[in-house]
Image (cartoon, rainbow, N blue to C red):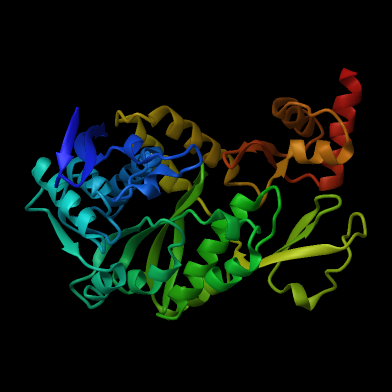
Length: 406
């Protein structure tokens, strides 16, 4: 059913989760095949991000049960208001949700969706720039329990005000869609924005999460705040990180102590971790003696928390979401891979380097386990494997598998 909104652009009513909302009718804004439709509409709306919003609902519900109290939420970049409306309807025991946007049409649409779902007493809508809105809540007794920053691009411009507007033990949810800088395509842009050097490697999406988390840790430490990563994931064109903050200088020091560097060999795919890459000779790979490169500083600690993932999986079993099956599979993979070391190997990348046919993930995992190594798939890449085997060992096992089948 097509609705009209302010008689200025076409809209339609969609159902997502337990709510119905009015959103821009994206088909009306396509002029050529290459157009990125969500950004062409007067109010940003991306239906692909339903998975992102589904997981956000689950995480906030799980977090609320974990802290066991009524919560307040802020979404300073609300656009159509769909995320805030879903939180208001699908998460219980919410005291208030404060949302804002600098786009006047977005505010009008968000107000319409708040009224459409009967949330006027819970959600307050503000026509305000995100940092200005957050700065008004950076004092005791006004701070939020949850802040969700979901920008088109980098969340870094909103980090300082978000951290200052969060209560002790608060939850900070961040989306980053600027994967070109974070994955090493635009290295200088990443260093400017995130304060760390990226690498264009096969596991760059994990490095992206670690670079973003490292940036959050460094920013939080300025305010004597530490952090604990509860959950993170990489899907489609974005990464997402959920961190719980902890007040205290020692907590901040501990988070800074988790930062370090990844050393990578582009010849044999060897990688290792160090707190300071300049304290040793990083020019030669210990496995093949080739020149090595590095990424960082970035977060070397956990990017998933085991107990939280178990609670998240339990919550997912009790909610009927369109993406529940996909989320269940993701959490299962995450729970398995969290015990392994950072970074993963991509079979196709190694096989291409060796000029060999690509074996299946299953066969290589079985082969590694037969040889006494740990090996599990990763949610970051359907062709990726985490293992404690060396890069050269994995190359040898791929050769064995290919020779066995030819």
